[in-house]
Length: 169
Image (tube, rainbow, N blue to C red; front, side, top):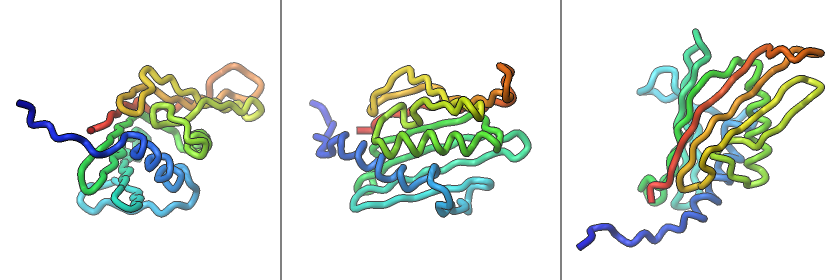
């Protein structure tokens, strides 16, 4: 006999909440980021709506620009969805990362929880997202922002995050 309870939560509700919350999250300029008191160097953004809560928490090593983070969604205080990410982003590439994330979240397109590919040929900046498994219930991939030196094909700097996540339903 199985002890697993019937899950009353619809994964499409969780996904809808994800987009709503992320439209008010890290990719938004001047959003309030809170320091996490019991975790040095960590910042977080919280978004709550009804029974749902999303916490996006991350930290960056200032010596290397390497970063890690997690995004977790709860419904009625039970964890229902999770994403983890980590890599490195030079500060000059973060505006491109935020633009790619924001555009994708506003369109409510799921690309592994990250952004949709975009390029700015004149500025020589490209955002690439290689999703290996693109299902909201289980996903993984790598996103990259590449800055090409103007007038050349030489990469001036590069940033990336590897990511993975899954439904906990």
